[in-house]
Amino acid sequence: MGHCDRVFATDRDRTYHDGEWGVPVHDDDRQMFEHLTLECLQCGLSWGLMMKKREIFRRCFANFDYDQIAAYGEADVERILHTEGMLKSERKVRAIIHNARCYQKIREEFGSFCSYLWRCTDGRTILYDGHAEGRVPVSNGLSDRISRDLKRRGFKFVGAVTIYSHLQACGLINDHAGDCPCFRRINAAYPTVRMKPDREVM
Image (cartoon, rainbow, N blue to C red; front, side, top):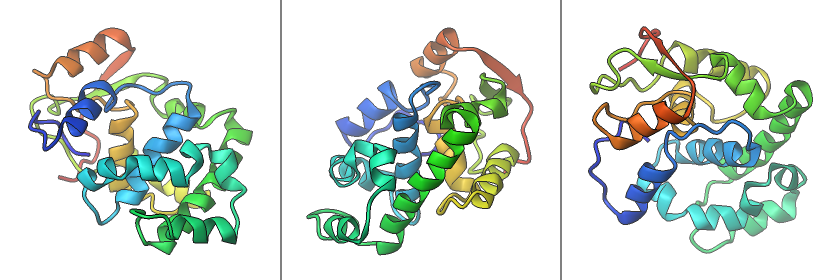
């Protein structure tokens, strides 16, 4: 999901923006996995479609319980692909199962995926110069570095653009508009750090 402009196609999109997008996820690996999975599933598709199908994804993928997903086998792949309304991409379904197993390995190494990710910002939400005024990229140096590391660890569908969107969604980067109430609310509730643009791709 890109920079917020507070023009929403549906009430569902508004609810997601106002209550979830950009809110820092510090200690909930299940929620972090849901954010990451939605971004991976979106590749080549619209965010509106992800919001529309979110409940279907939750049913297919055990409410994003990555331990359960990591144990999925061929019968589960078939079950998911034959679920009414589900995306018919076997590559993506298998990638999510594979990513859940990679996710477990990161938990083993770092204690949690949240710990792995937040160490990149010293636990603080980044406020990049110019973003609050609307100059928001599709990827940057941080998302590229994390993308390359996740790929090295075996993750799939985690390009720099996908990871930038994930960093926005889970609050490592606050890309709400400066005049958006969410921007001020998040900054007041969580530790932040101001930084200069980092190899931004517009």
